Length: 178
Ligand SMILES: *[C@@H]1O[C@H](CO)[C@@H](O)[C@H](O)[C@H]1NC(C)=O
Image 1 (cartoon, rainbow, N blue to C red):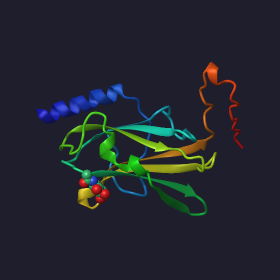
Image 2 (image 1 turned 90 degrees about the horizontal axis):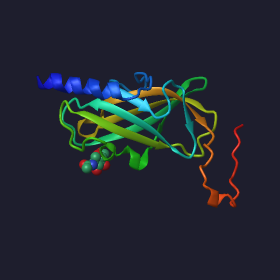
Image 3 (image 1 turned 120 degrees about the vertical axis):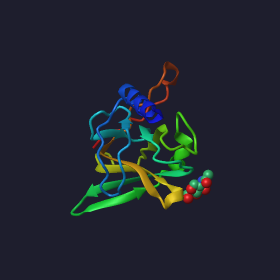
Image 4 (image 1 turned 90 degrees about the vertical axis):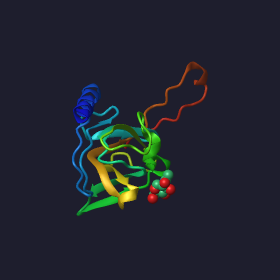
């Protein structure tokens, strides 16, 4: 009965949430979460502007009680052979700090809402197409993958800054895409 209620609630949450079409990972094993939504992107490749965070809302069911997790990111590029490069998310890798409906430890069967953020640095070259993989791993179980998502992304120039009337004397730098 409890299981039924959990599943029903999960379905309700998903029905309300928006969704991005993400794929199963290739470079690391791990199931897909219940839902993933890259804000502003329903259909990949997701356009990610420099100088701001990409925000990914993930809903997943805890497969067991877990006390400590880390979020890992990597990007793969197709040169002559495929190359996968890990990217350190810094503070954003501390998964437990970014649950919006819960906190660690999470309990078996719990449906957790998690907000993943990653800053798109200016040194990510505009126009770059890559396959990004994001996953969370269980630190108490030798980094076993809890879930993983894969999606094509493309880096775009920064969005124009939103300014108000008082700031108009300051020249706004104009950034032009190649
Ligand atoms: C969680 O695991 C990481 C990586 O093993 C470790 O650095 C960190 O101290 C742990 N955090 C807690 C609260 O145990």
